[in-house]
Image (cartoon, rainbow, N blue to C red):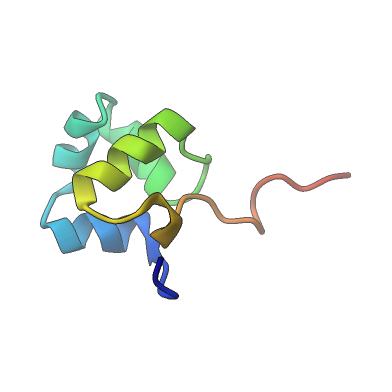
Length: 74
């Protein structure tokens, strides 16, 4: 595991894929993928593993959600 973490966008671009291409790989609508990439919703774990496999990074090296936006307790 490296100390560098990649956002979904950085990892996708590193692989040279467009948002549309990544959405097709993950079998989802482009708009849905964009919502994940903008951290509007956290990526499901099965899709996260598929994403990591596609871009060639360890799942531990990718930032899949923004903790400041998700999982807040009230």
